[in-house]
Length: 505
Image 1 (tube, rainbow, N blue to C red):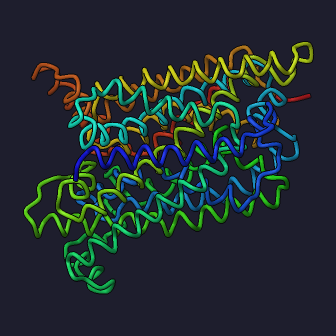
Image 2: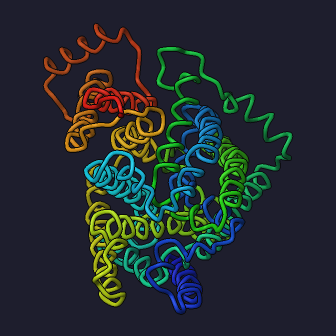
Image 3: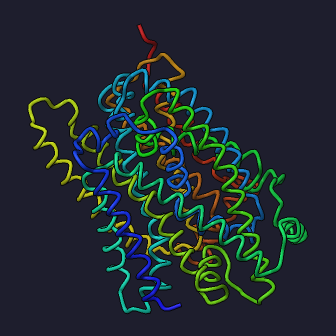
């Protein structure tokens, strides 16, 4: 299909988003930007959060994992499901009881101002890296299949995409993205279902025949029982649970939408509905991945990983209509992730770092100007980070995101766990040093444990590479750390906080 036709559909889709944003941002103010005036419908929030939770990474990268690991990613999804219950019945009651706009205000009440700002800082770092990694994946696909053919350089594509996101989130904030995310989730899930049906029809498979063929090829295998493997099922399930607790329950972007719901009960319904829907949707994405590999095997297609879905959908193997549906689904997966991150980071910086909510001397007009400047600054930061990911250009972005989450969300997990499950007080001034030291130690452990990966990326000399690999084998005896690195990071932070704490009087 002509890239110009695909571009026309992308442009039309964006105009639709702008129309929704214009309508929903009428009479908006700082309160509607930050928490949607606490009047969001829980059903809309729950449905829209499906798109935010999945993002373009799930749309492209999860189907790509099936070739190497079968349905093994579903182990992590089971962990996600468990983690949502902890959010619903431990964290949300706490947030509503304290009537929080920023969830990191809990850390100020519990420990002090340094812990509070440390929590907000780690959120900003975490969400910047995670959101821009997701953005890079989608923008890069658009670049390869549409913009390269039009002679548009990557840097211009990234700039324009961020400008579009900036335009429709500039005024309305959470009030707007609750509606735009609902619209985009509808398009994304619709695209998923249509692509599955299209490939099944192309191969002349029924649902039963599909799963039979997937099982024959070994793609439906879920549980990994190799204790030393990073994909061992207990590691994956535990890691998935704590990733959800950290990346959703301790994440201002995700919780900003939840606490915009009027009541605790409505917010809990939202979270548990989301957990159930994600079980089904992720299974569909894995089924799609299996179908893509079956189709590739039958037709001599050699693409793998993140490349397989876009290459088959846009490479002329399926109908032109499927190409359009793929592009719309992909864009729909990008925007909920990026717009929510940009809005949440603006909120966190304004409230947590600048103290805007406590400032009674500054007028609402001045606060609005400050908020818009911060929003614009984060858009520029996003742009620069996307260019960095283009330079790195890893072939499996979902692995990169889970790895980054292990480093950056671990201190948040340790801070909140220490605050909730102990009654000790800490030396607040030392909290930031504990939270900085823990990821450094974790990186050292991970560097030795995954020596082969680091050696390959760093292109060391053969003698140095062999020495590091032998050290790794001597210390870990073949045991590989996977996504449970987040838990280890949280435990180290917890121990560090205990060391600077004392019993509460």
